[in-house]
Image (cartoon, rainbow, N blue to C red; front, side):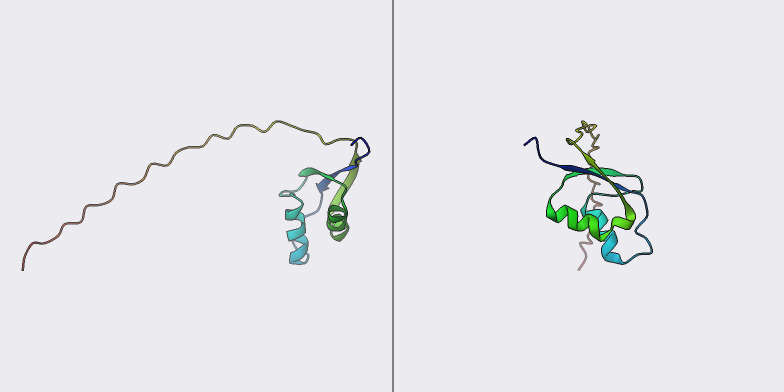
Length: 92
């Protein structure tokens, strides 16, 4: 386990203006915004994706993944709207 390699991948250029599949590859890696970083194991699949869009990325090798605790998300419950009563005419 100690010999596993990890990559810190940072999106430094926007995929806008490049082929659509390059933007999809960035999203698949988990890169959502400029200067956003993610840490992945250095697997052949990840290395292939990094190689495809290397001109958009900054890649650093790190010893172990940095784990940060996620902030709890406040979820507001949406109350259903009351259905409008429909008046029916009783006339024939």
